[in-house]
Image (cartoon, rainbow, N blue to C red):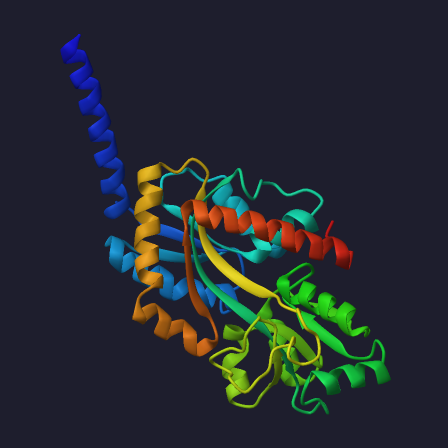
Length: 322
């Protein structure tokens, strides 16, 4: 009997060692699924993270863009994948906090079907306008919108995205009427702001920063609680006459539910090291993105708070997607 228990204990050690070895030295490529278009805000965060995670794990990390249904299509791929550490998701406020309230029926549960690994970055949105518009600040935007109700169009990456809901919250706070134009992704909407087909949008900074710097669009405010270090002369919406106004986009890594604890801990530790590194910070901070780390249980609690916050925003806006 004593030998039996020794064998059981030894088998447990061997299983744990195998799990840890798999997490540290993957035998096949790891897919980091980005449930949005290439070149968009989520893609911009995912690519440096994927590169650095691959270096850390001595593995190939493939960025797999799977856009559709506000990020739900790519998220569903991960939810239904094996919990073996080879399929990960770059989740967002949209996929894991907004969509559950927005869609009448999702093919997955945003909490039960995932293992939260780590929050990696946050960013405010910027209110950007076409430079031809006679708008230099929030006050002049509000005045123009009141003079031309329903005539000013703002683009978004799609119905129910943070871009869209931030616009709806701003409309309510300012008491104005803006016309929402949904696109299939942030790059397409921003292209039409630059081209003058629409007048403005609420866009994550990393998507629009290069165009702000070249003068193709004008940033008149950011939606965070503080000014962005990347745009220190651009005020917040709260500073611009709307105290308490704040919305922030975020990005985090999720795995399928029931990922073994040892693999989750290894991934979380490596991602935390990357997010705290100067190399990662140097890639994102010039774009107005703040590397921000929460791992495992703390990230899961953060997600639950975000579900409540954004769920209220969806209900207040009346936004729905069939």
